[in-house]
Length: 251
Image (cartoon, rainbow, N blue to C red; front, top):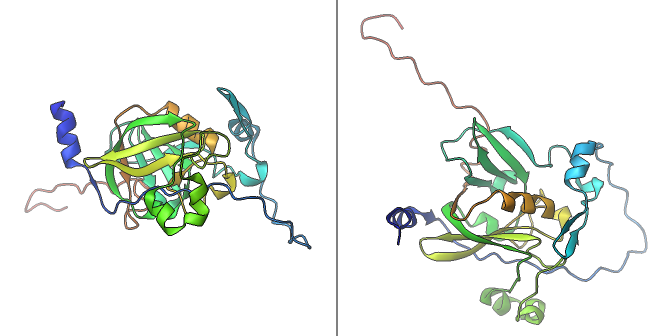
């Protein structure tokens, strides 16, 4: 093994590993007798933002457009100011702020809005991405099958990649020194879950965003997942270093 890689693996740590337990799309519910009150109309989005989330071909499939009702300018992927000592390309996940950052030069980062499943809060620390998959196959974990066989039993043999697959258009697989953590950064067929917390899954992005992130993520990319205490780290400039003074002279 490459000595640098060996040293990196030995130094990685995940505090509280949890399998990425995703939920396959449920059958459409029966419509209620009376329609609920209409939700407030979100502010209109720019043509540029709408274009980012338009339908797009991807191999043999076409990724559906994200409805404008689920988009805001703040939720759209964008370059933002970000201060960190992590190297360019590092992915920093802030589950508690529902954000994912990929570090860019010059105190900048590409920011994505994410949805966070229950497993997304049980993971923190440092890891890496040895590989990714396009339209990945999803298989429920042994724990999912044991705790809810009625729900997950029909999918025990796995679900082929596709528009309804819980992992969406791409999945980035997170490993540490112990191997596969079963934690994923992935797409979703449920765009309304982005920006929210949900009962299952890990870190999910709009399919358009996970495709963009995957295109800009190399093998062995470093991943840092922040704790609740670290949430918001990097979003404000660091305090300036105090000016050194010579003893006996006024500051």
